[in-house]
Image (cartoon, rainbow, N blue to C red):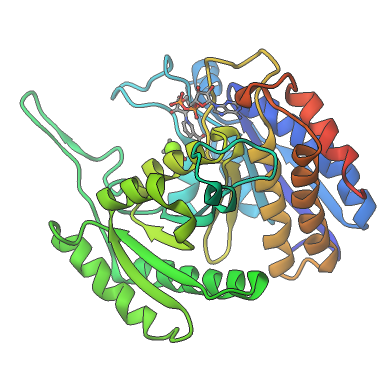
Length: 362
Ligand SMILES: NC(=O)C1=CN([C@@H]2O[C@H](COP(=O)(O)OP(=O)(O)OC[C@H]3O[C@@H](n4cnc5c(N)ncnc54)[C@H](O)[C@@H]3O)[C@@H](O)[C@H]2O)C=CC1
Ligand SMILES: CC(C)CC(=O)C(=O)O
Ligand SMILES: [Mg+2]
């Protein structure tokens, strides 16, 4: 942590709408910080597909080092379908950060915001409030960049380790405890796996069960990932905290976003023991980039998660208060009629940030 009440935030806007939603979020963070008497010193760092195209390096080591030295990292989005490396894959510095900084807990809340249309007609869908925790350093992403590819076959490896599964599980149970205290209802952690077919997931389940025994006050269970895809559409209001493997979490978090308004409403935090990256779960959206219509809500909510995390790391109560106020301002703005383009409205990126800013202090 930096000087008292001042934190250093590394900002990596990235590509496409990543730059647009990041700029809109910083425009809200500055006055919010002033209002709460907290200091946020930002440093913007280059990385991403267009940086790769221009320089041959998508993630300069200097950017990585500066990000790793900061108190927190705020990221827009990175990657561009037309810009590929020699092996055919895209530039993804966000994955490098997750792996190099050990950010095992990919926290992806799926919450229905008052006033934002949900995908399901059932009135209970207005109460959707669950959190996917996507393990973000191993699973099927373990062999990223190292998979075997020959003329005849391609092979990638899925890895599950005891150490990371224990950390992921403890993180999930602690989060369930906190949510239970905040919401005044029992918490439940459901591991999403494929233990009926793969030994790796039977192993993951047994490690998870061992950790569950440490938290007798929190409910625990398991769900196969295919059945979870079904039940997230059928009855998402029944779930609370859902830890899962990396690829499963990548897919299910987009599904979850689709339930509550789309990717523009899907914040995330990639948290490790010492570092954390906060970013919307969406990508660079080439289909709408440059038009000023990207929804910055997911990034604003990710910034609120960042303030909350910084408070938990000792930055001070002002950060916790600012986090609560920012999330509340987002809710109040939509409840009052804010309508972004992705839900059929006319409010663009800048107008949305202004509407949220106007609800701060209100
Ligand atoms: N964390 C990251 O930086 C991520 C990067 N990517 C990269 O982004 C690029 C595009 O990927 P896609 O598969 O198209 O996923 P995407 O998330 O960028 O877009 C999917 C759909 O959601 C919409 N969308 C996403 N964010 C939105 C927002 N804030 N407001 C309104 N609409 C929004 C897009 O217009 C598009 O129709 C690729 O290069 C991909 O690798 C994809 C996902 C995450
Ligand atoms: C490069 C991708 C793994 C990014 C993504 O899809 C995500 O973070 O959800
Ligand atoms: Mg994804």
